[in-house]
Amino acid sequence: MMLTIRCRIPSPLLLLLLTLVGVTALAQPAVVELVDAELDAGTELARTIWSHAELGYMEEKSSAALQSFLTERGFSIETAVAGIPTAFIASYGRGQPVIGVLAEFDALPGMSQAATPVRQPLSDDGGGHACGHHLFGAASATAGVAVARWLEATGRSGTVRVYGTPAEEGGSGKVYLTRAGLFDDVDVVLHWHPGDSNSAAAATTTANKSGRFTFHGIAAHAAAAPDRGRSALDGVEAMNYMVNLMREHMPSDARIHYVITNGGAAPNIVPETAQVYYYVRHPDAQRVISLFERVVRAAEAGALGTDTTMDYEVMHGNYAVLPNETLARLVDDNLRGFGGFLYNDTERQFARDIRQTLSGKLPPIDATNQIQPFAFTQSMGSTDVGDVSWNVPTVGFTTATWVPGTPAHSWQAVAAGGTSIGFKGMHLAAKLLARTAMDLIENPELITEARQELQRRRGKDFEYRALLGDREPPLDYRR
Image 1 (cartoon, rainbow, N blue to C red):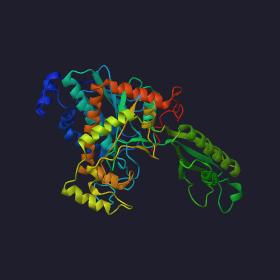
Image 2: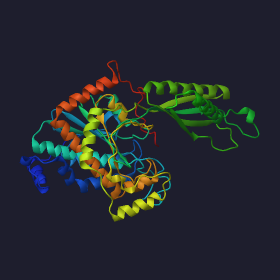
Image 3: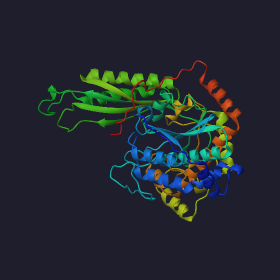
Image 4: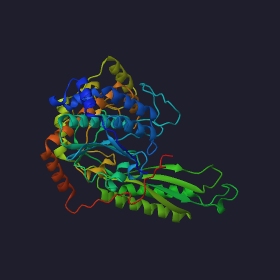
């Protein structure tokens, strides 16, 4: 069921809000000043989402917090889009151009952690924002509000949309929004990601596809009657062995990883059911498809050789991010204009303490005040932003929300993300998103150039087909 909520800030109240931050509509306020006006509220929003730490497609409280924040500031909200209860589109303004801002908010399982520089889970098996999506969602919402107020104050034509995109971590939430055509009328999409450095490099990723392979055998007493059983775990292990042999005969820039999610109930029972969960990655989507097909054949062979049966479910699939240099150069210029930031004494001590738990060669603590060189880079990770980027000119960046040297998907990332260290990086991201949106609205020729670049890069014969096929969103994949 789709529900639309509409609430606009009356013009006199908007002017009063602008006056409170020292600007008026006639003064045509700088959009970054409007970001600063929302700093405290945006920080509290991020802290709230951090405390919820909800997993993919289960982010009811986090999604509601973002929607409430935007509704109270005059956005119209379209809820439960693309058949996903926690997905939403928040819109403000009128006419062209339409600037989309992505907002993620899902956490990772098993990463519960207090905002301390030592390992201190808040619960035994709870989730945690080890990829900083609480900062992602809050910064994007804050930037969207600033752009909305700037549009109102200046009287410019334009629409800003904040896309609430759940389940990035393995759930491909944005793929379903893309497949449903919800970005078809958007001119440019902006996104960002928490990290341990400030960079607007024109980065690409790997495409990926995942699947759960379930084997079915016959249970029997493993000692008294093993001949009467057929082990589903044997099927899993046979598959894994063949896939591991396959590694020698696949492209060196491919990645395959798996976990056995069900290996049986007890050693003295021949496992009746067993399951293994696979990820397949490569920079090229077509290579991912062919590699995944080889993994499927290994699963079929494993079942055949162990006299079991097998079925599998495609869980998610993402395209590699398609870089857009036109937009990346704009973001890089703006990032250099803002510069980075330094820690205060308390933050510096926190950083020193947490770096004692990190390994390898670490960048200096003051790397937060640096901007990384502009470059074209290849990440071996994956994101569902990729599907958006093949349909709409898209650009992203990172800011230093974690202590330099901190890897993503770590308890150290959760810890820093719940402190002022994370909030400083989030504030920089919100300013950069808002300023870039303002530049695009004021300079429509940049949008035209970005669109032309997208068409060149993807090729004239490109036809978008989601790697996950026509499956419905796996709303229970984290349960």
